Amino acid sequence: MILEKKIPFYYIFNKIKYDIIVVFMVGFVTNLLTRQFNPLLPEMPLGVPALLGTAISILLSFKMNQSYDRWWEARKVWGAIVNDSRSFVIQLQSFLPSGNEAIRRMSYRQIAWCYSLSQSLRGLDATVGLDTLISETERSEIAKHNNKPLAILQLNAREIQELRFGNKLEVFTHLQLDNTLVRLCDSMGKAERINSTIFPSTYRQFLHFIIYLFIVTLSIALRQVNMIFEIPLLMFIAAAFFLIEKSAYHLQDPFKNRPSDVSITAISRTIEINIRQLLGDNEVPEPVKPEGFYIL
Image (cartoon, rainbow, N blue to C red; front, side):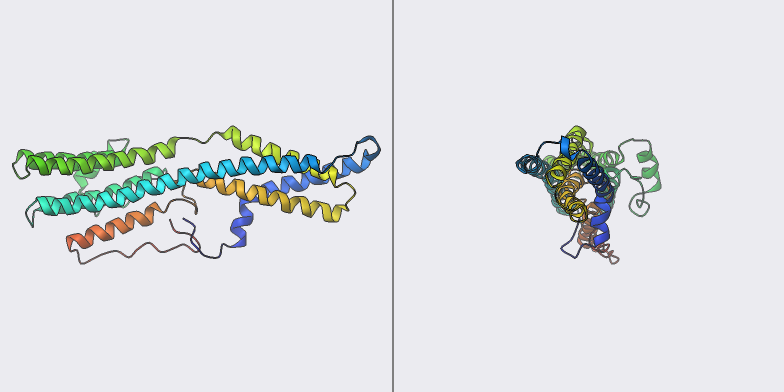
């Protein structure tokens, strides 16, 4: 997640450097051809590129709104995960006798689930960092599953079932814990849906085509302007459009391990800190620190 800090110029430039190079080439070639065939070309009124610019603005506004909606939904999903993770541990402590080892085992599994889910959504190894949280036997069992976070939830569901059949949980308390697991599973499904639903790529391709068309028509309309001033002007205007488009493109995929991602690693660490403090652990990790102008 990008923080309210000064964003370095290299990050902004790297987003659009290839698009700007293409704009420079398109503008340069269009300018040369326009000057060469100037007598044969009709006048290009500024209203034509102005109309295209307006259309581009509307399309960019729509895409930005849709992309931010996906990003914000992902953030709300992880907000629900934070709440349900805390609730799960507090419920365990309320429903089971103090000192019951099942509380600590399931609480650690919940921490492991958060880290595993965050890694899985980013396409990384979902078992990294789980050594200190769950046993080797459980890690071996989880390794058999394609969906590692789901396997961790199943382990907690099984232990809750064993507690119920061992008469250590009443029917009502069993239902309360089961409902919390269902909400966690529901949040996982929502995050996976956002991650697997692809924003139509044709929309981006058409938008790029219209921007380049806008550059061509604007270059023809400004053919009386000296090339030294015209080309930088085209590049500056195109850079504004491409920056907005690229920002929307990054926001539409909030789990791609980019600076604009939802900070699910930092959120998972916050959950771990909260749960360890609820358990009274002496060793509590530090919060994830920002990597410059963003935090993952």
